[in-house]
Length: 294
Ligand code: NAD
Image 1 (spheres, rainbow, N blue to C red):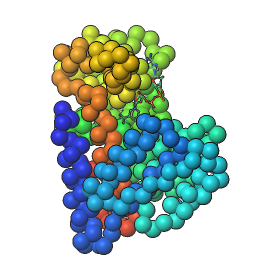
Image 2 (cartoon, rainbow, N blue to C red):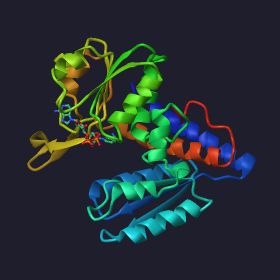
Image 3 (cartoon, rainbow, N blue to C red):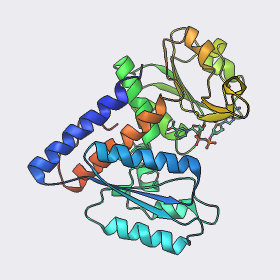
Image 4 (tube, rainbow, N blue to C red):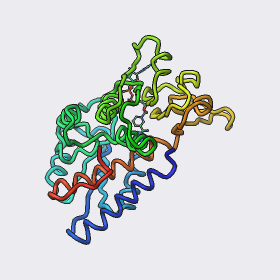
């Protein structure tokens, strides 16, 4: 279902970047700010930087010490807000505990908030207006549109109600005229709720919690979860990544399903680049690229 889509989206972004340079002498710029040395975050930031350069954009990384003060972090963001060569700013989460994530996110200029977490963008998305859309749900939406064409009238169940995945995912599905249910840790009879769905988006963070017998035959399953679990079959002490759905049993009944790793993750990065391109076009009063926004 998703095999070629991230590369196709990155290819479309790269073509637009070539045109922006040739016709307007503009190079989109993405700045990623990483505080501390969380190993998973370091891997994400490296791979974001590499792919940013690959599509022809200007990539800037700010690596700050784990004990950086809030004032110093806010000063870096202020400087990036004011930098005309930077069109997108991403602060890698989670931040160390002494930093207030809400305050940090709200200090990013909404126009450069390519993660779509700023309260202005959340409000715009919630009211169906043009906004910056969080990358992971946007990537899921693109996969679903690619598969179905129109999502109108589909029954969609989103498992998880976080601000970064579950809620914006539900808004996007609603925007495409799905009938949307948001399920969460207090949902009664989750299995029955999921069994009604044509589209299941699992964003929980619990390894393989959705078994195949919850899935309606032919339903499309998008697995957002990333869970690290022991993999004794690979050797002592080895670990592996799995999603929130039990891939083997769900794949037997689903019409299509995304794997973990290699499904939603690459689409998230492709959408980060798409958002940076969109932000660049908006900042310069140019038409937005088609098919790369919600
Ligand atoms: P979160 O912890 O903020 O939210 C989890 C949600 O799951 C909560 O709303 C909670 O109500 C719900 N939940 C918990 N237990 C449940 C249960 N037993 N039944 C039903 N619902 C339950 O997590 P998040 O930030 O939304 O991330 C979810 C998962 O997606 C994590 O594994 C995360 O690593 C992954 N993720 C992946 C990407 C990507 O690019 N692939 C991006 C973001 C998050």
